[in-house]
Length: 434
Image (cartoon, rainbow, N blue to C red; front, side):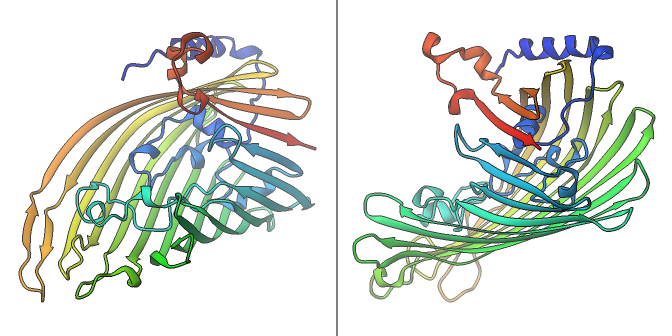
């Protein structure tokens, strides 16, 4: 898809030319600010996605992954509508002291349903066993508390705990009951005034049940969910105006689901499925700040996402097995520049090279024994180009960040052109500090 983004690019270029008259841009890394600066590959791996700009942009790494950054922004509140026009996150930070901050937050969960999802290939096992994503609602309505503190001159610590769940109508005849538990902890080391190391770890578990709305009979139930995320980041000054920011992320996700036993026909077994996903991503950004108010951040990275899917498709002891892998190589840049005291323009561009490998799907015969190939191994590659644009406005302690879908420049205002851009083509975040 070709996207005309000359408006954003020209504005950012003019901003950089005018840089000597600028002052420092707002530094809080709201989701909308990151979205305007990053053309990340979350859409490529929705179940195990990772956007490194949430870690590498400025000094405010994602507080849900690295809560040790909480003390950097005291006595503030922000609302982020990245999940739609009016529903995203709400964070309230309250300074308990000069070095300790309490966080209270609510958000729409970014996690997928607490059930099996299709593998990266999505070719057989879970697709055929009817445990697709369309059969359930996502777990959402997450609330939590966090705490971050500075322990001396060089150590930062943080943690948060959150719970999520929803009970509602999945369709006309079914109810969904979802729950999720998430715990995270982070530690940061300030090696000196310009260099630092940070690490974060999060663990989550949950459950899912789909009931008949009228009689409460279980249609589907999860047999377990466990997730683990490990992230790390360094920041090292390599020049008076530049620093290198290496990063890594490791994620593990295991899900299982089984059909309710009461609807299993005689002399058959229940439909079931199990998925294990493993993802790794590493790379580095070079953050260049030639003058106050300008950030240019080129970067490069490499990632691998692997899936193993097991599931029966015909109510018999036979089960399918699918192994698939996705290799991602990406490079791109983020650019942010202040045009006026009250306005910042943002631009992100990225090219991602994707290679998908699907191992042969195996059909296991009753009683074990040698398996038979159902589908052969397949390979395919593609190149994905993406551009993002955004703006920031600051006035009297308020900060508004807006991320604009570049296709909006093509489609124009719906009322005038009749061309619709999903989710209005815009997400936003509003921040206030006192």
